[in-house]
Length: 256
Figure 1: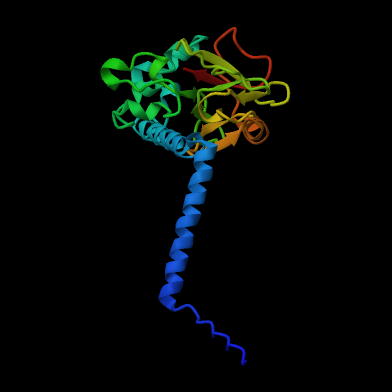
Figure 2: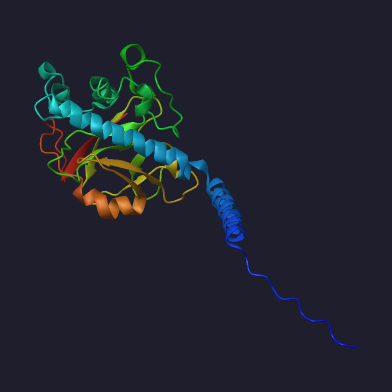
């Protein structure tokens, strides 16, 4: 008996190859989506949205400064529309919200932009009537930052705290909304800080968050990366309130 002849394999046509590639692309997308979901939405959509909020806040600072002597609200006097006079006093955390209320026109009159979608705090219904305290605010203010020093700390997620072990709550930002007026050392060894286990740090033991720099750029950083790459360069505040000058070079940061 003669053996059966082997069937000659037929090569893929161009159309079939395109179909196969399309199927592989869909499968790859499903796999990536699976891993994104497994890691949590806080690693993807929420954090990107929060970063966009901070970019808008950075743009608002530049727009406001452009109309007010090239000074951001924290550096401009009350008579010229800012809140610098109030910062001649210590412990001004309770009025952190003032910085954003002043820029409401530059922020597009949308109070949603000052709340991280991953925060437990909710946006105010209206800037003019309901935004009157820190309970509708997710971001801190570096009151001495400016675009002349691009790496100075202008803002960021409110859940930053002291030490290398992440706080289980919101760090420097009390949930009560009373705020906090903090000196963050530019020496990350003697005065380390870290993100608390809230907002974008959920599920991350070391902590992670977003920061807004003096040049308007936004960085996503872990606690370790913040201490090593950013904290030493956040800018030193020189105009501390009388009797409240830190014993070490520090940046003044007001938390909501």
